Image (cartoon, rainbow over all chains, first blue to last red; front, side, top):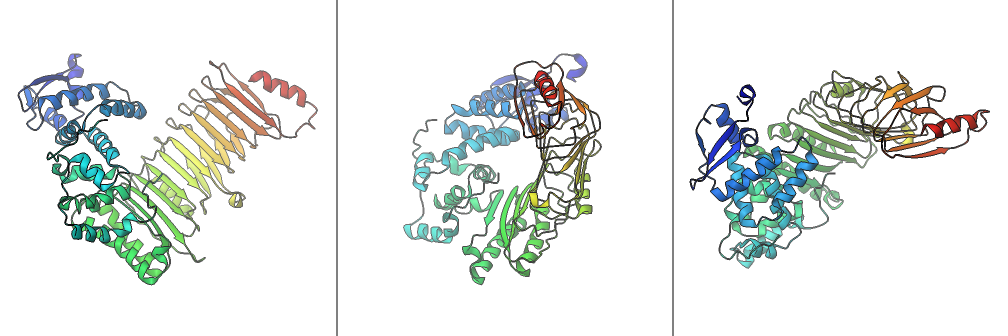
Length: 163
Length: 353
């Protein structure tokens, strides 16, 4: 263990397009998937991450290093996350949320999900369809029926903000 | 953030359902619900996101049929989560208890919450008739945050053994003393205790053994209940950051509150076990119309203090040991000048700050 030798342990991660990355164990274990491998003693050589490509993995490692360098201060961590995600396009965000899911990193998964939600918030159905390239496969009659079925949710000033 | 128009590359709809649930979790209900209109594959997704919110509006209780429709809607949604083994993280329910039917449904729902893993519960109970309605809440082991409010102070909330509970907010809730003691003693992880206009309480003791992680303590009450015999006792808890008390007798048992950043007491009868107090992290100290320390000299060691507010009808005898940085004080003395030594006392106070 790192504590015994006094030098930080480094892990080697391999993306599904065969890129290799070194990352400090202390940062990498933000991923529960990696942490379990380390604890099971499977982290001796190279850790293959079959569901993450090199470009996304590089980005996730930047995040791991950045967030683990911040001491326990939720506000600072939050502002780091906001800044980290601020310049990412949707395609990158989608790759990252899938990677965070595979790596079991709930803090990154929540941050990216919230970021995507932010884009959809207070937007019309048509706008969201166009933005995300979603094809409307309802017939006008079907769409009207679904709308009618959910009428109660669209009316009034219902909020679920609980603060 | 610029989003390129994506033609046929519909990435979002191909994300796994639990990720879409996560995204919809962060949307307000209306926006989440609207996603059912995006396309056929989106039709059902929102309804099983890990957050549910229901508010019984006046229209939802106007007729027997409307009441029934509302209750059925809540019942179906909870039952669907249970039947399909779906995780529900947050539940917000604003409900008016009108009859035994709605009470028995509520009592049926609450135990389900544990089975579906609810971590945050916001329950607001309104009672239209001035009749006492008791709602029994069994222990919920999964609960992390709990906010209960009741406009009419009518429900009797026996919460026990909430071992995961971190935040409890009770507003206008009537609690039996024994039950409240059990809540206070059986939540080892509690970080926030927030109580407003609660009835039935006699004493709150915050002690090291049980409230190691407590960070925020707030107690407010409307003046009507201020006459009730009631005391609060606060040990020198190491993680405590804020204390705010209105109109209750408060006893400070410790003399060193390591993490306390803000102390605010209003209409409080204060009892200090030790008049020499150490607040190494304190930034704001506010004493408004409080009493109990007119005849003692308080020695306050708060090197990080930024703001001191005093308002009262006597001139307190307070000295501050060395502080660094600039800090502001506001002092309002209302009356109290019949004391022959008032000028001396005032000049001592002004010198101290």
